[in-house]
Length: 169
Image 1 (tube, helix red, strand yellow):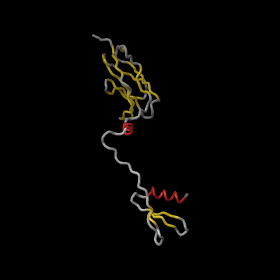
Image 2: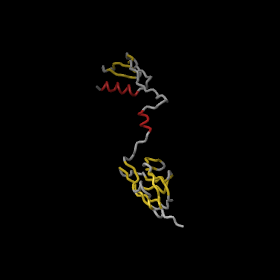
Image 3: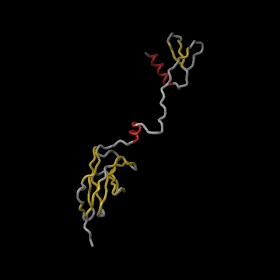
Image 4: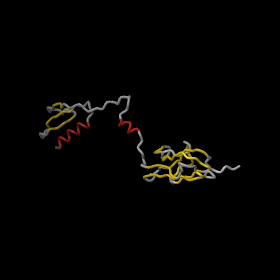
């Protein structure tokens, strides 16, 4: 058992171009080496060809390669709540709060960042209640991102809504 393990270990440790020799040592045990010992009759061992993996053609990547390229969602649920979707949001001064529904809870150094009309809005934070201030009346889109430094970890679906505010003359 020990000799077989030693032989396998030698096969793994040696480079592909090395030759392996089998011989009987002075105690009568079968031994293996990458160099024939002096004064002992050693026989070269024929090794099976090594497994190799060719390069992937540059055409269509395999489905497995595509799956590795697409980031896995860090959160099973990430969405904004508290925005009306069928009627206008009444905010006389353009200030309102939205909530973030996230599962599991925000991890480690991750932060929330709002995207208002496709642009970052406000300072990133870790509280799932985010306030928007003095937003103009009219149609807007809003999403929340989970970020880690400059890296976007995940983004919620975008919600489109209309802000209705009192027009002062």
